[in-house]
Amino acid sequence: MRIFTAPLTAFMLGTFMVPEGASAEKPTATKEDKAEGLKIAKTYDKRNQGFKDEVATLKMTLTNANGESTERAMRMWTYEVIDDKRGDKSILVFDTPRDVKGTALLSHAHHVDPDDQWLFLPALKRIKRIASANKSGPFVGSEFAYEDITSSDIEKFDWYYLRTENLDGQECYVLKRIPLYENSGYTKQISWIDTKHYRLQKVDYYDRKDSLLKTLRMKGYKLYKDKFWRAETWEMTNHQSKKSTVLAYTSRELSTGLEEDEFTKGRLKSYGRG
Image (cartoon, rainbow, N blue to C red; front, side):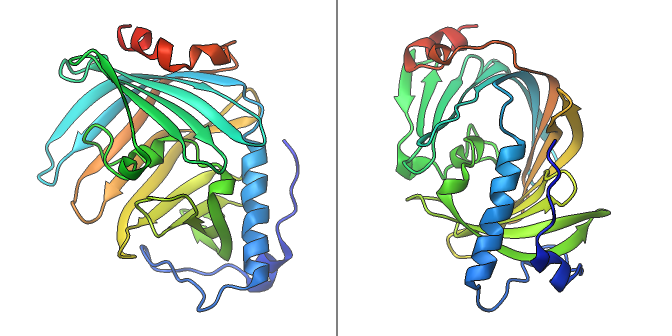
């Protein structure tokens, strides 16, 4: 893993505490803030390159405002694409419960252009393309939106360095990223990335009214292939609806030898059928 020297701006500003849920943005962002934010984002992105592919099984737990929970089992395949224009490709398939069994989502991320997504609905035996205008909607009733589960290519955002602060005992860069793609459900996202390993720790999502909508917490990081850090648990909390969704990885393997031609619309039904 490369050694990266922390930005001079971070040392000049120092580390300070900000109340939970507060974005504590500067009144006016400078060119230096933008350059610093992009620099950190690029380093974070580079630290995650080279894994080739990933195969995983997950458990999704949905909890409503009354504290009642339901569980779903899923499988996920990801293929890394290192290209100037295209992003990673992924397939997510539900195995349980019965009402969503076989539902499969194919995502082709792009650096600048809108991502392509297709949903296979086994009850209808057909594939539905997810329109760009609908990607801010919830994915199969969870607190994750369609746009949350495609790769967040750094070219899709304007990045701004806000500050460096301590989060749960870890010094973190706090960055603001503003979506550049049309029809995003968010005006901005505030991200915490630890300064030691460049691991994403937390994201606050602000809705189109610029109010805090959701918070994602990444927990239980493990190191794979002596290089790639992966969070074993993703916790998404909706502050407005009081609902939450937890994604817990039950198994994960990197660099398994997947081929890009396995991630096509024509293959989506076969994944959904198991």
